[in-house]
Length: 598
Image 1 (cartoon, rainbow, N blue to C red):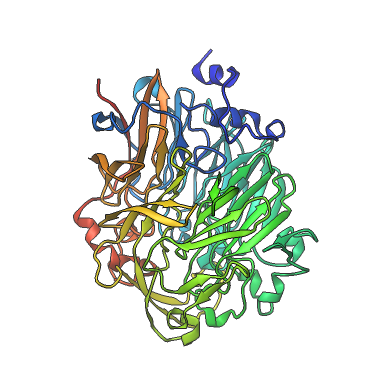
Image 2: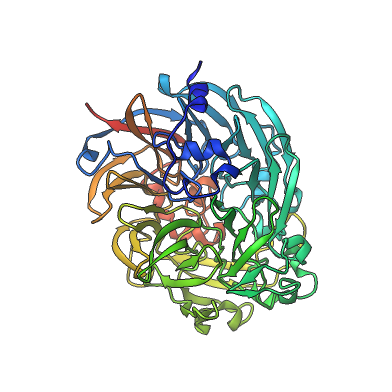
């Protein structure tokens, strides 16, 4: 019996978060696997998206003894976001376009057991906003699930790599693409869609694992039957009312309204709710789409069996800055404002750290996690609405007016790079951007499959400062930053915390860094072959703990290098801010695995 079959047949312990009620009706295999400290079976480590491991061999005392033990080149040069899965003795990882998938043998330093490379039309490349990234594969019931750039969801046999089924999730000809990691919940696999810069109507779709048939689809804007809202759907504790979305758009603008869903999905087995966020409304020119533009920029809590929304909360009504709300929803049973809380914690692009009661969507906190945020003074906890500063609101100035010094920039105080939560310290470890912008809207017409942006941007560090990023420790009990590590460039890597008292993250110039959870003191650093925009994972093999991370500079921050862009305003404004990055690193996708020296 091979290692995979042994693992799947074994009886394993269940992590604390997964042991809460309702596990019998959830995906039993994945709940067992997420409770096995040596595995990394879910893209974010567990259903709660905590990116936390109970492993302790690599700790504050031993981290100095880390060494790279083997590497693997993916053969792809664009930005490598996401990270590998580890199931038994096999590691699975995906690449940017052309979206290769590799199954690597951990018993033989990453020997390729099988690989898959889909045949895709390269015309999808220019339709992909902000690099041709892919944020990883998902596992469930003996299958590996990949969301391809051309918006095809494919199920691969985990043992052989052969295609079990595939389904077209959306139409790249109309600007829809696939970049996100799917999530397996019960007997379904859930996937979102990219394309907010092309006027898609964003949606999340659930497919039946057995045959790929569609179970349900829930849109971000439109009539209630497309949103999957019912009379019990609430926002801020009140019923949303009939056609709550349609009332906030002019005419049929909702049909090309954006609200893409290319971020992370979380799941609470006890409450039987999945959580995710929607992105920017289309176009980026706010004067062309008056109203709140619901339900873009929104946290959704949905029943995974039916897709029906239990509650929603819109963070940035009438978005004027491209502050997509797609960042991960971290589920943590922790103390908030001095009270034990079933919390949902979300570090939004708009620079506010939102804390909600995940059972009902009550807003408990909304505090800035970068002191330079200036587009709003605060969020009213009673109404949930931000108090916008007109000086930094492009729509208030009118089209063709260049609004200067807006903080954060469109790529946010944090983009999709996921934070980590440590139940040991009850702290959140957050990779952040420290970037501001000038934002000039202009009139744009919608043409299917063509960019529907309508704004010119320039990005730069906050006035008087040089660093473009910080790595922070954030405490939601009092809503404050506890320590902060400045970085030359944005921290575009997903973080990892462990019971060993460490936090790991990567930098855009290629450094893997290990720091102390309590103090932020650096314990170890190693420069990998390229800039890191991947997410650090950990696992055990033959009783030893390892860290794994993909390097391969790119993504929005590295789009200048990845796509060969040179104009300062290219890459939706990012190229100018990150010009110096090429002095520190170069392109190339490499997996590096670290272990302790003897």
